[in-house]
Each structure stands twice: as C-alpha cells, then as structure tokens.
Figure 1 (cartoon, rainbow, N blue to C red):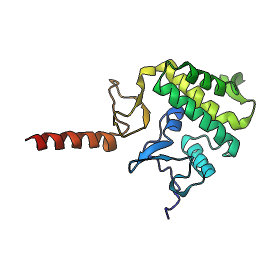
Figure 2: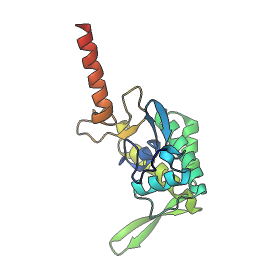
Figure 3: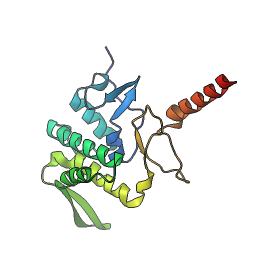
Figure 4: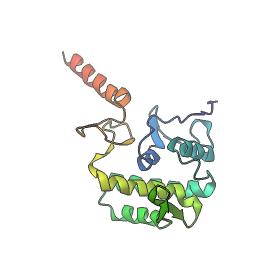
Length: 189
C-alpha cells in the first residue's frame, strides 16, 4: 500500500494556476497519473485539497465535490485550448467557466483594487484557473509550452530570459534527453 503524501507529489509545481491545473495529470513510470483520481492513495477530494494548498487557494476555496467537478471542467477546457489555441469549442468551454465569476472594482486603503465574485463559490478555483490563462495569453502566449519530451505531458510558462526553455525540468526530462543523445552517439561509434 502506498503512503498518502502530505506534500504535493507532482513532479512540477509552482507554475501559474492555469498550467498548474493542467499539471495535475502527469506521467509516472509510463502511466498517466491524476492527482484528482486517487493518485498515491489520496481520495479525489484529498487530491483537490492538496492542489488548493499548493497553489495558495486553500484559504479562499473549499475542497468539495462541486468544486472538483467544476475544476475538472476547467482542466479539460484548458487542456484543449493549450493544445490547439484555434479550437473554437475550447474557447467556448473556457468562456462557459468564466461565466460563473467576475471582477468587481473596489477602493481599498491602498487605492484602487479588484475582487473576484462568483455566482456559486464552488466555481472559484475553476474560474481562477481560467482567468489566469487569460492573463497568460494577454502577456506572453508564446511562452505557454508543453515539455519537449515525447513521454511527458506537463506544461510550463517559459520565464527564461531568451525564451528557449524546452523541458518541464532540466533535471528530469532535459537530463533524460541528454543521456539518450549521448547513448545514441556512443552506440554509433
């Protein structure tokens, strides 16, 4: 029996919320693993709670069944939109998620501000991820990337200075690619 992790078991965390949501599915020992589908002995809601904690959303949103259903809807919409930005139906799905929230302008002690409002709070995490994707598209859409490894399904926002990052992690996928190239060269000799 696998021990239930107390920390996020995913190989890549800390990406913008929209991409972090996509990265709740990853390859582990050649099989697709899903944080929201019982990975590592976690229940679906425990996986959601762990994801909310790791993204800093735990204090704002609850890990309940409705939030999970909405988040899975957003994850599928984002996966389709990232895979094919020209996919009109993916854009419609993201718009459908965004229909459940809005930004309200506020005046705070520090000056102008904004506050997200939701018709149903369980849409909060899904809406936040979809809204984050819009922000990434507005700032640098060409830096939204899928790992260059053919066996990896992870996504990242390339924040490198020259915008040439190819791997989700140089220590994992990048190192495997280098080792594979080295092995191929030495075998040719």
